[in-house]
Length: 96
Image 1 (cartoon, rainbow, N blue to C red):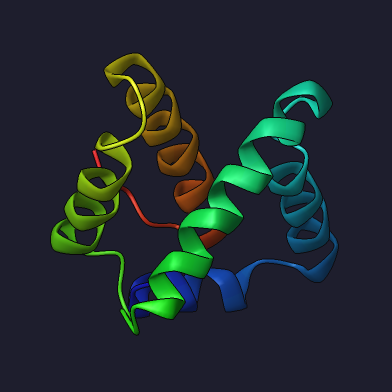
Image 2: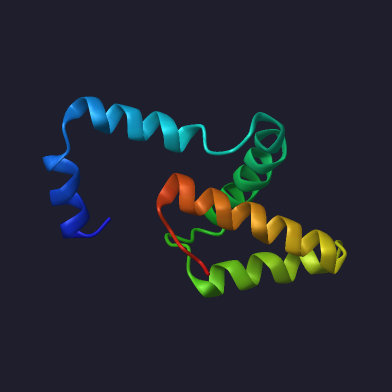
């Protein structure tokens, strides 16, 4: 979050902050969560194992390069989409 975002967050009434947080936690439909969360957790575990601190382009490229040895391109795109969505929801990181 930027400093401006921090200021806006502090100016938001607590009840609205709670509603917004609940909304962001429920953005994904339950059916999607079943696939998205394990895929995201696998990515995070691999990132931590490799001691990467950020969600940089190099981290993403290395992860998908390793996966490309065993997965089809269509599966890679699906995983990329899932991880992209989860990074935006959970970490406010946009990798577009």
